[in-house]
Length: 178
Image (cartoon, rainbow, N blue to C red; front, top):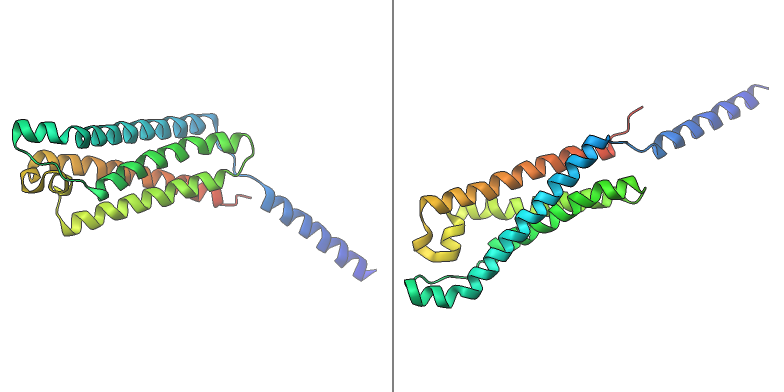
């Protein structure tokens, strides 16, 4: 008799634990729309920045002939721009995947990791090149000016805020609320 009660109690515990593990953390409609909007804006911001970078590199010989400025290729800036674009894409697809019951955690983990890598590259360049790293990478010593410092700060701040948002969503995704 006592064993039957223990077995029954254990079965209830296992079932309850399984339900808790399968319980999905739901997000509200406003949060869905906010994440879609932030992801879309990030994607567009990254894509436009990437298009400007490619356009500048394509037109660099013409500008060099007219102004005497020599444009240099920047692998680090190219990586940061691609990372921001891809991170924005995965941030905006996270709510869609969550809504259809897909593997939403994959989207937010990937977006977070890509943003973290981009921020790591930016911190590395800030540490070794300085706050005007984008200008120095693109224009050499001619790019060491206040405008390039502002441009570097904008990309850094935007990426830091995006990373914080993604971390918050990631924590919420993996927190188990009872």
